Amino acid sequence: MVESQLRTSDVDDPRVVAVMAKVPREDFVPAGRRAAAYIDRPVPLGNGRALNAPLVTGRLLKEAQVEPGDRVLLIGAATGYAAALLGELGATVTAVEEEGGPETAATGATLVRGPLAQGASAGAPYDLLFIDGAVEEVPAALVEQLADGARVVTGLIDRGVTRLCSGRAVGGVLGLTRLTDIEMVVLPGFGAPKAFTF
Image (tube, rainbow, N blue to C red; front, side, top):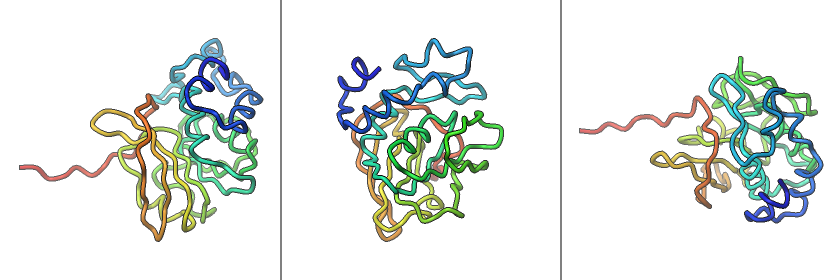
């Protein structure tokens, strides 16, 4: 995974590469799918959910620029893989997963069950919003839980294409830069309001 997927695809942060080499991804994949833990495709988890491919996770971590002591709001905890990696990078993680969503492995993160788009306001303010998947828009409810200047990494769905994005929330306003097209899992509950058309 490290040699063939990460280093060849712009995941060149030594800390990110080291933690992804250290944390066994197969421990966060359902038993029946462990043989597919390292393929460069999303791993189905059931109920319409999937675990992002390793390359996507690596790119999100690289762009997040995690520092020890960062307070991270992780949206879409899934099996706990991203939470474990963020924890290894020294972050304090509050991980949100839906009721009835994938079972989350114990990682040392604080797990909050509920709608992904509502976040976890009790732990705010956060230094980093890490949305582990693609959404149509980042809801204001999540931006409001961020410290001024907080970093944000996510995927955005743009006319059916998922794009890796990063940015900052300043003064309650989120600015994102589209970095690259990349296949990401789509998270439920983040539909943009439909605009009126004639």
